[in-house]
Image (cartoon, rainbow, N blue to C red; front, side, top):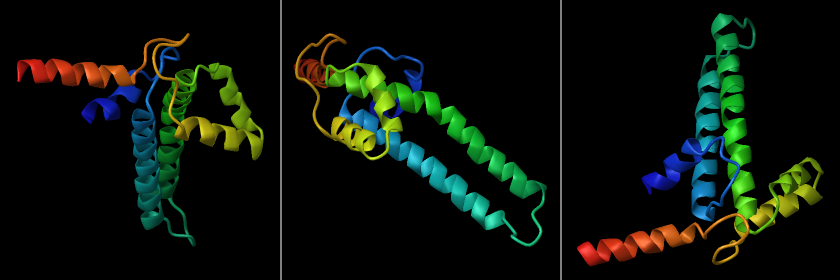
Length: 138
């Protein structure tokens, strides 16, 4: 499981290849948790009547977290589209209200194309191969 948590960060600037639903959604959970913790942290320190430097600093932390996660999020989404044998440029459809997000949700939730496609080997085969090798040497 550690592989699926670390790999999206390791491949943050890699827009080639494919990724599984498990890897993608575990990455999304990481991002949501990070933003949730940052929001809770900033809400606990914000005084609405007299904001000070600490409030401003926490706002900058959230902004920095957003920009730090933006490219890894886009690359993971592009690799997920590649798993469906679709071009990564289709990620730009998410900029279209409603229709783009419905397309994105369908692509991220449905299983990808089995076997090798134009973007590389099936990422689910890594786990099966590893399981077979482990059972041989166990």
